[in-house]
Every structure is written in C-alpha cells, then in structure tokens.
Length: 106
Image (cartoon, rainbow, N blue to C red; front, top):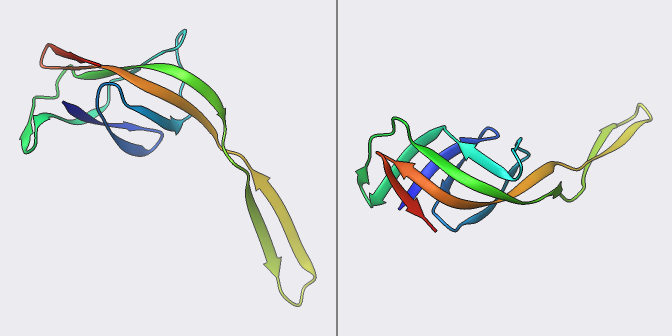
C-alpha cells in the first residue's frame, strides 16, 4: 500500500513505515496528519477513491539542513555579496494510511 501526498510544495510517495525528511510542518505533540492525498494504491495501476483519505505520521526530529551559500557578484562594479541559508526540516515516520475506510499500518 502506498500513497502520494503533497506537503511543502512537493509531492512524496509514502508507505507505512517509511521515514522521510520534509519541509518544516506544524505538529500536535509529535503527531502530523496529511489530508492532501493525491493518489493511493494497493497494487500497481489500481487507484482508490480519495475522499476522506489521510496519512498519519509521527515526528522523529526537527532541525536545519546543511548550509547553502548564495553568492552574488557583478563584474567591473566591485560588488560582491555572500549570504548563507539553512532550510528547516522535519523528519517524520509514516504510521498509517487511511483510504476508503480501510487502515494500513506499519
């Protein structure tokens, strides 16, 4: 069983038990619920009705990614600018996928 969810402007293919790193999401005592399910399937090529579908996950860790250096440069103008950025993330574990009233757990 797998589902495709959208969070943080990106799409992820998830299955029960998967651990993935997503953009920082708000959570309630370590529990996250994704209600924007784009696709769900038990077998390849067979898709289910997505009304009232959701994916439950638990937060394992929150943090910030590696530093990305942003360097602006204009030649012949003596202009240089260096800026760093660290993107916040949330590492989650998929616990349960609920589709058509059926629950699939890890």
